[in-house]
Image 1 (cartoon, helix red, strand yellow):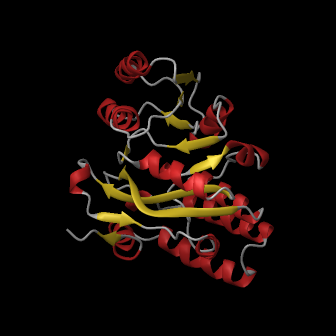
Image 2 (cartoon, one colour):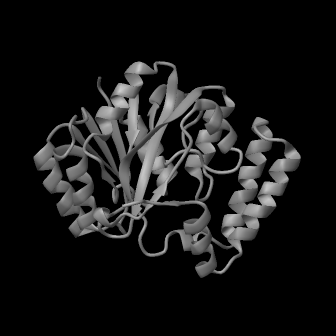
Length: 276
């Protein structure tokens, strides 16, 4: 089965992380992709350019590099990259994460056995710098019905693990401007259209979340984004309006917590520790 990998790179990424990402996509995978579409979201600097050029030499024609003149943000960059994906099935990946060696094999097998599913992802292990030090798993529900219920409260997919049909995403208008939540917005629109979705129960990717990423998800800009999310849920009639409003107030309250407390909330209630 042919499939494309879609990534977006911007200047704050490290060349070390990008190199690890490409290793996991290409050299360490049990099945290699037919195509890798890498969008350069604005100028990325000499060091990252050298890393990209190195991988162009290693991978050759399957690696398409799409340079943009200026930084336009993740959602718009992915929309631009999607135009250059030649295959119906597109697998997402972030340039600082690491695929497990059998990620693509497992997702291809799932596609072959579940022809009605148009969007699905998997579980992730979060780490700071070294994948082997992963201590936290970010779990998402696996069945179509559980995902639809979960989506009323929280994002039901780990974006960097998803695979989707290009035709469906294009039909729905792709990623739309929604500060910090372009992916959640898109998933709600897919679910709202009645398409079948799923998640693998397996961990298929190591996600880099160092430097207090969760604790920075706060402030009034995030509350504005929460309000946009509330409006979308109402528009799509995915949730009882009263429940949606209550949830908006709860989520907005969390956005006003001090960084240290918000980080504890994420790690205590929204993540599960890995038993070793």
